Image (cartoon, rainbow, N blue to C red; front, side):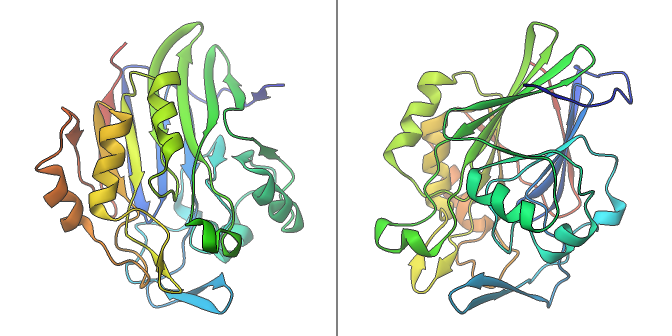
Length: 277
């Protein structure tokens, strides 16, 4: 069953906006929809618990707080972890806001009082409607950690956001989530070609001596696999557990084997994009 959200503005399918709050937190506005990703709003200097005795210090202040967000239609959450859905988000977001994520996260969200969690397995989709505008969110394969430590971290999903004006497909946006490189990434362009924009989580997050998110070089390799028209790296410098910053991505992108345009954002930047269909 589709999630039906109230029409609050005339949909604009000509131009979209990506506002980078920090870490993996963005606000995506396109086709009349306003989508929040991986909400985390702790201040610089505060610590987040990552489980199993591991903590991370936030190094960079988010560009805004939850109270300063525009009106939202839904949240797309890659996984329920302290640096992607923190205590501020749990306390301040509307408990009736639709949140599309995986089953593990929905269970935790329910415990926190959120009433509209929608769980997807890999390749499953959830439709969101807003008048004649439609958004289809499909869960993409993700692998958060090597097999020998996988049980120490919550399961993660990537997401594909397909925007429609009625039956007309207008834009395709991929969000990697906190994934490592893995074989199933190659299935994504087979089933979802012609990706307009990709948000790629990097950072080389290192927990308990193990790298659990892509380094800059690996993030560019992911782009070479997915082959989007434009790639925007995020999740690259916010926490003390990150080991591979934006410079690593830029260096690797200089020798990328695809025609993808890399666009780089700092906290508070707004990237504007246009529909290609």
